[in-house]
Amino acid sequence: MAKRAHHHVYVVELSAQVLEQSKFMRANPGYITGKPCVYVGMTGLDPDIRFDKHKAGIQANSYVRNFGLRLLPDLYEAYNPMHYEAARDMEVELGISLRAAGFGVWQA
Image (tube, rainbow, N blue to C red; front, side):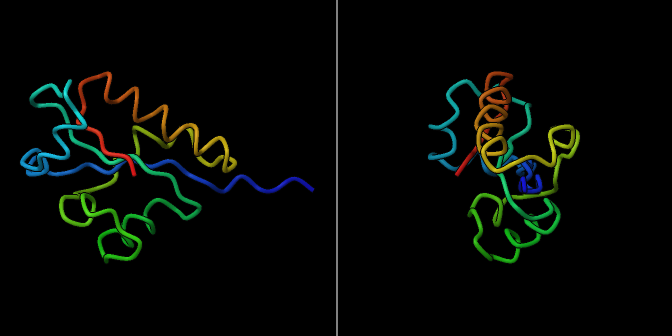
């Protein structure tokens, strides 16, 4: 029996304060001033639950914990849910496309 597709990619908007982090800026040399800064991730959980875990410090990315504002479902909902391999690949592809559009992007 095939496994149920239950993985999700998700995008978290980060506050502009993340631009003060030199590591974040080094990862985004093509950042266009004024564009959103985001974290792109994938999870086997509902993205809302995963975001809450980040903010609570549970298996959290420090940029999301410290600078995460809200989920941006318009950037990812059309892709979900999917199988693990597809989600893993889509996480990378989505980050690349947002960075190419001038977004500041962080991926773990």
